[in-house]
Structures are given as C-alpha cells and as structure tokens.
Image (cartoon, rainbow, N blue to C red):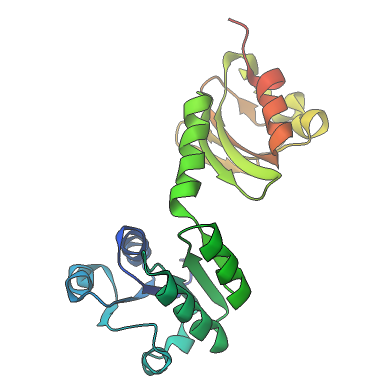
Length: 225
C-alpha cells in the first residue's frame, strides 16, 4: 500500500519554498504554490498541482483560495518579515492546524511564536549546524537537532565496531543511546534486532542526548590506529 497523499500549500517560491514545492510534488503529494511574483509562479507550474499568482497577506485572498482545505501550509516568504507575520496570523485565525514558517532572525522567530506558528524553520542555521557537525567529525554522515538536548546522528562504523552485534555493543545501557537503524550496503534495517551484526563502514542511526552520543563516539566508536 502506497503512502497517503497529503495536501500542501506553499506560500513563497524563493529557493527555500521552491525546493520544498518541487520535492513534495515529486513525492506525489498535492501542492498548491503561491507567490506574488508571476515569473516564479510560471517557473514552478511544472512542479506543482496548481500555481496561483496572489498576495497571500490578504485574508480574503486566502479564503478565496480555499486554504482551509490544506493539511499543511508552509510560509516560505523571503525578506518581507511583515508579510510573513501577517500571513501566519491569518492562517492561524482560520484554524489551519499545521502552519510551518521560515524565520529570518531571532526577533522574527519570537513574533511568529506569539502569533501561533506551529513550527518555525531557520534553513540557513539548521543547515549550518549540520555542515559544521560533518566538518568537525569525519564519523558523522548526517546530523539532525531535535531539541537543545537531543539529536539524531548518522554515523559510520569504525573497525572497533566490526563484527559486533547490537546486543554486544549494548549502547543503550552503556551510553543511554538508541540505535534506530542500520544501513548495510544500501539495505536498511529499521529497529534492528539484538543479533544484527555491524561491520566496518556500515552506517547506523543513533538517537540520544548530545552529550551521550558524543561519549559513545569518543569511547565506543573511536578506533585506536
């Protein structure tokens, strides 16, 4: 059975909004793309279910578009902070359940919290953190920050882990971390069983407190060359 199609509205078709629009559409979801710039609207017409040239910061426009019918609305408006805030406010007043908004800075973030944005995104900051983590530690393949304390990290197994089972590693008891998945030559095992054996250069995904994951890296992964 295939994944259930969802309905998304993307407001703002800059680099961030445009990339989300294209990716969601290619995943088979229904995507309404909205922008004030007619050239951008035309450019993303092939990558969306429907495109609309409109000013989403006007409440009557949002209502006319039937925005209430969408499960998710992503406000990806660029540098115009006032328009971003007004659009978010109108969407929440219309009882849209999932309003995700791109924030330009800390002050923009604080106002978006006040008007009820369900999730606030800092694309440059988030990507900067992920790149910095990968640059600083060659064992890290990817990094996702869940909160100030917790993160999900994709790591590469060193020879210190070679031919050891999940049970033998006992990561949860020793370090307070959980191995969520193991990728062995492109074959991913989610929630691996205790007898799953890890080999050098396999990739695996770990969830835990940042300090515990760091301790696991330092003590459990680092190979003595």
